Image (cartoon, rainbow, N blue to C red):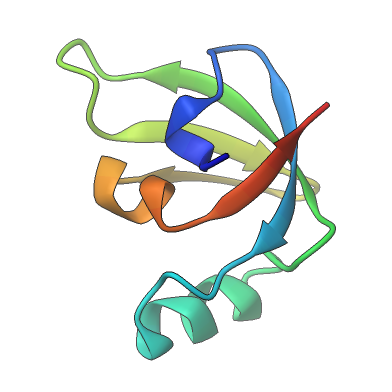
Length: 75
């Protein structure tokens, strides 16, 4: 399942970032977005893109394309 499939307000645990380009993967990892990190979908923009997510110590927005490339497990 990919991150873009998780409903607003739900939590998910990251399984893999391998679908992202190397530079984006490194940037997210430097921010603490790593495999086994739990994310919460905070909200979606009115047209559905971008998606605001929160993780321990960080809030960020991801495009739908980026969210589709992040493999997660729903909690």
